Image 1 (cartoon, one colour):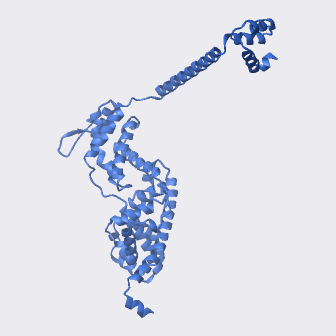
Image 2 (image 1 turned 135 degrees about the vertical axis):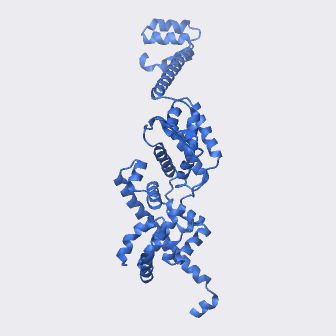
Image 3 (image 1 turned 60 degrees about the vertical axis):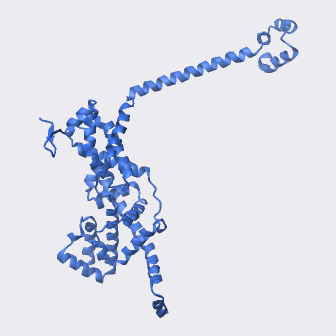
Length: 225
Length: 166
């Protein structure tokens, strides 16, 4: 079998398996080719869990180092990309565990802009909020703080299942967890996140109501009296 | 659309890629229900917030900085330059270090022993061994002929070995 495929410029390029073989035989160039081929994909897997570019770069580096060290365990015939992605997701999970903070979420942790974003979201009709597509930096920063109060496992399954739409079987395969473990995790993660969201809404509501009151013109308040 | 219908679908909606997927009659029925049912509206708000916040955590897919590849290569070169230790090599290295430490310890003990013995003046040592062997005439001779063995020396030798001299 010819272990080569063509790239976009129609040039013959060695396939993953051949590059792995050559890397194992000590060909540094071959491994660099794998890094160039999958660098972007690994960097964007890291982007699923971490938004800071430095963090994503560190994880990409860590992932390729692990891949290099574990290259002899790669099973011929299996998809190299899947194997690599598994290592990348696990590197992200390790990082989530390392930076485990699990502080209680509090509105006091929010920056002014994040609070404003939340108050505006609460002021909108629910259906409008549901249809909102627009992304914002403030929402991302707020989400970061909210998710930091979850355990690394809960955070991982929430993101992979609820946000990225992976199935429990796929998550199980990536993490080496049984499907029942993923399901239990998912159940707990949902409960934990919902609890925090409900608390956040409760805490934010009186604040936004008071603010609305304060923003009312003086004359209107005088009328109420 | 009843509350039950809506709650059942909500879990699905949070994962839907695009809320636009809820379209047509379903969308209208949902809007009508929500305007009349504050409890479902509150549930949907929670779900909408969850959806927005979860989505916001994902960084947009981009190309990494080209310098990243250079950094990865540099790190890999470092890794290649590092001597590779197999389990048995590591075990052998560990055993060798244990042997070296044991030898150093032994040398230290022998050295200390020699040093301590050298510090005891010869005559005092002979006097002591004469006492221990219960050779009192020899001990007596040493006391009277020894130049180094002062009264103080005899007393300290006796004090140092009270059990053996008894």
